[in-house]
Length: 299
Length: 74
View (cartoon, one colour):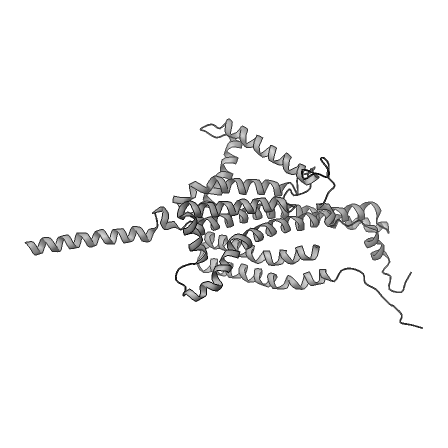
């Protein structure tokens, strides 16, 4: 026993198994050694995907004109994506084309995140980098595809890399920055945001519950067992917070994707921009005025 | 008699680095939230739009903090 040994505090730290980064690198369950190795996290993903497909498929199959309680709930979620994510970013005229895609992104990410707090799963399916990466690549495909469809490949690249209204020497710096921004920075930040949020959330929950178990069952002196109430309360509060974070991350992922799509498809292309309508009205008024003047002159 | 070690701390200095690194994003997130609140108080009818913009800005700032989190774990 050293002079600076803190007694109970030291044994507490030494005896407890802290959850670490190994949690996210589980042993493969099936097909070990092949690229198709299925770990616990992959299995959670597969099960959750099956649940989403079956539940939404049955809901869509049984859809009636007057929605029941469950159908109303699902429709509320679909409506939320359209009204809160697609329309504010893209506007009424363009929203419908991309609402399905955004709905998929929002729902799947939210339900994958929710696996974190579902008993039995206890691990967000988005907590291994592959899953957020696939979603981010899908987001890139969405907004690059949207840009190519509205302006063509050349037009899209020209307007993304060489935005107008800039003196030409600036393009030497601006074009590489924009290229990095569109193809590297956006998907990378989408990936890291989702991935790191879910890892941090899972670690917080795991520390809370591991601490509760340790304090309650094996802490010395036994008087410390009472402190497990605090860690348990903290764990339950963080569980609720993690549900909120899971929803928020799915929302942010979908909102950012919608905004990127909006950036790569300028509204003027679809023909409903307010300025264009104003200009057209102005021009027709001008034409009418000219006609009136011509009529007066001939008279 | 050589140097006497009175107390030792074991662990990783990178977690202290993480703590320092998140000071900036923490201040930035506070500023974003306070400005959004202030703007909503000035113009309550713009509240919904401001909230969306605030969340997007928070997401951008959050990436900086999360990058250091990932680096600390690596």
